[in-house]
Amino acid sequence: MKKILTLLIVATIGALLAFVLIPSNKAVPDFALPDLQGKSITNADLKDKVTLINFWFPSCPGCVSE
Image (tube, rainbow, N blue to C red):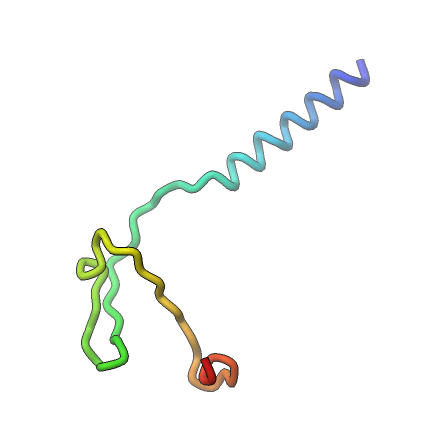
């Protein structure tokens, strides 16, 4: 009986973790951001491209030095 209860608890925890960690593949909301030259870039411009968007804050010393 103790083994069945332990197995049930482990299975429940595993199912909850899988539910939380499996990505939902939601679409990115529409956005427009300026690039370093001031040109506006939208998510339509980035379609089918691998993209890294790095957000930083101007008064963050680490961000500015980056």
